[in-house]
Length: 445
Image 1: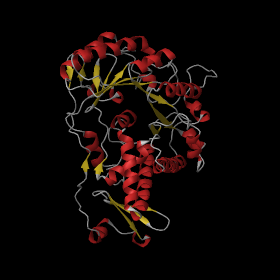
Image 2 (image 1 turned 45 degrees about the horizontal axis):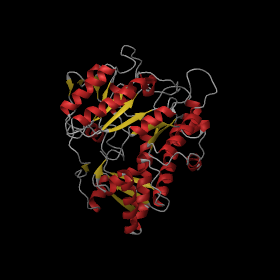
Image 3 (image 1 turned 135 degrees about the vertical axis):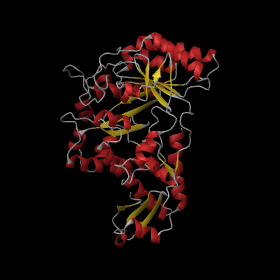
Image 4 (image 1 turned 60 degrees about the horizontal axis):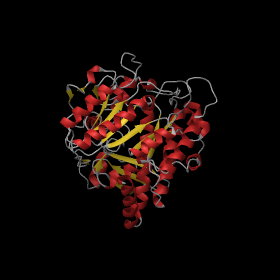
């Protein structure tokens, strides 16, 4: 297992010690030293003394994802979710019934008197079942109020096709936060995000127009951007700023950016040329968002590109996904799983909304990532935030079998964060503190 990693810069190299989260600038002539050589000249512990982010597993307020619909009204060409089936399991109901929503509410009132963190309506496309959802949310709110339990955050993930004025009015009335998907500029977005039938329909136009209405009405939203081979084929160095600036009107929010995991031809990221371009894109994204934070513009937020810096400065391990621990998924039949990636595998079933369910007592995701054989010699083993056991299981049949496109993307992000830190730490210490404070508080708001 390697403990020291070297990132090349033009005039010097950056040395990163994983077990202490310490960053050094070194002469290029020192770059060939082994771990043993470096331990002799650098006073750092061999023991991993970095602490995981606070919060006892199984004791935090729970968050629930509800598989409101196992079907979708779009036909996105790269969709790993199989339009909501996650493996084409056609046995389960297409939507959650009113009875299951009521059973879940009763179970939560009885077993989570301290309250619920978040309830998220998910899919597929949840608004396919809007008729049910618009009755269930007031029912849940009334039940929580009558039992003196705080109403949780209510979120809904949608492709925005069914996000009508009526639905937006409902979101305002019930303080619902939305999650939208947009894969960059129109020409790129509409290559992958399409309807099931051939048409001139533009998913980009629909999302853009709808988002402007959300902004006008003050409805909070976040965005998901999925990069696929089309992005790489149209990528030229320096274009990330151009792409993101073209979306300025609607991207003053939290954005999650991640490479697609698929084997569909024309969208899969698989060649060495693809990986090289993905690496370069990730680095450009880091500098795009760091520049925004540096200028004090915290309305644009993309945690994946900036948080490695916070983990390093605060000497923390990036916490793995909380699936099965802090978060669970309720399927259309009332079964409960760690997350949607496991929803067709009974081996991972945690229980159901009638008889109850048990959460994991430890965050095995973090532990498994740090100690995973494929990750032990990676610069990101303590800092990786996109290592996903569920997606790895769904794709490779093994929870610990990594996804190369994600590894390439995450390593590039971490290396650029280390380079930026090395420049800041050699300059004004106050500057480093202020920049990191700006970044930190932007994620707390």
